[in-house]
Length: 620
Ligand code: ADP
Ligand code: MG
Image (cartoon, rainbow, N blue to C red; front, side, top):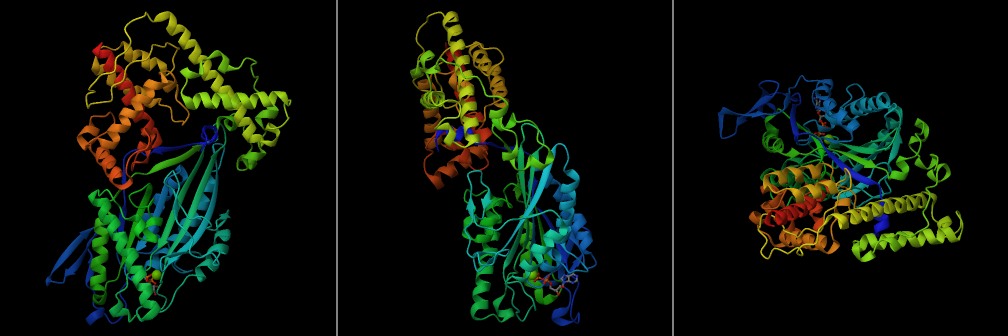
């Protein structure tokens, strides 16, 4: 990706939600069927609204007690489950946070009943969709415009099938650079009403691969996953966009082949189902134990659930169990899975995209054209920034700039020249899409402003700094942080360079940390060089980054913890990342470590480089 492409890319950011949210787990016991005698006799019973007990198979005089976020007994209605455990999660979708509801449990225990239900007793899916559509309609107003769309897929024998377009089989599952799980090629339908939803969902449900076994007349042989996206666009600058995903999953049950009498294809199906549920259980184990490798990729189901378990979602597992003795071991396995699932801690965050600044300057659109951005009036028509005649590269020695900045400046100036020589609308900019043109012009303007500020700072610095001994590199940098020499003093008013100056002036180490904290709050999040980076001599900045990189690649956990913003867990995660992926290629790769956001990575680099400047000063 070129620098200009990176610059023009809309800014993606994750706004962390306060605190952590663990996976919520509830258990639903379906009413008993059969004679109630022998193998149909009940072996489980509810204790209160959170607990249940099951016979101990080693000693039938004893019971084992389990406690969950909620327990729903045989008399609980669909409404009880929905209102108690599902509806409270939905509001997070309107804040741009993911959510998942997952029905787990043995075949015949009531998963499909809970998720889908019947026309008389609608389950979680129809209730959630009806409410969500209503909530987005109510919430659409001046500030945010909402839209809802859906996809529906099943995982059958480790293949992803598009239920809305059954000809699309064996679709891949991918992860984008923001760690979103995607299924390229999957049909997505926009829905504005509940009848829209039904018109897609009902025929698609009929496409589900179901077959009868001896155990369950319509035993689901596949995992069915309904994906619902809630997208929102801000009605005024900066026209932020958010997208949240709701996963509603009806899992196939884990089959005991001896009991179901499965043979041939059915046996193969059972194998695939068992494998994915086994991996699901391994994933939960790994998350609970904080293992460096979580085997999400070992099955399609867990890969798809990667951002629902131990990821970014508010998750609810509804464990369905049956009361009859013949289900005893399946019930026990399910309860044990449920018990360990509730220890998984998710870190929900709001996913927000800020469009580029050119878009942000557009006048407020009415609600209709809030979605298709192209319809909005164009900056070019309203106001063309005035370009100055003198090229900046002539004013500022390019060797003083970071290579990437110098390259970008030259590129933009070349474009500007061509632009001027062909008149306002001449080639090649004419051939460039209008939005791209705006962006280039905007970038040029921004670069100029930054460089001008830099030039002013340099002039001031030249006046202020008395000649002194050249800064020295510390031979053996303490492991605490990477130590770098100070480059120069700049004093623009109320910019981030202020912080650099203040750190230089600090004599006390204690105060320094506080300042570093401040820098991180206003830390630059763009991939373009931040102002604080531009304020440092490029070779020193590069060396500082190299030192941090070396420590990231070779430091022990203890060494890493000496860096700013690296605690015990992060240090462990870095070492784990190295084991899995090898070396970090550049210091910015720190962002790839599990749980590290772009903002944290920037803040980490900045804090350590600025700290090294302060260290040097305190040695002087
Ligand atoms: P699963 O999807 O787990 O294999 P199902 O949802 O198909 O199980 O349920 C098996 C049978 O039990 C179905 O006939 C279903 O209608 C019935 N059933 C399940 N849960 C309940 C419940 N809570 N109340 C009434 N009937 C139920
Ligand atoms: Mg089912």
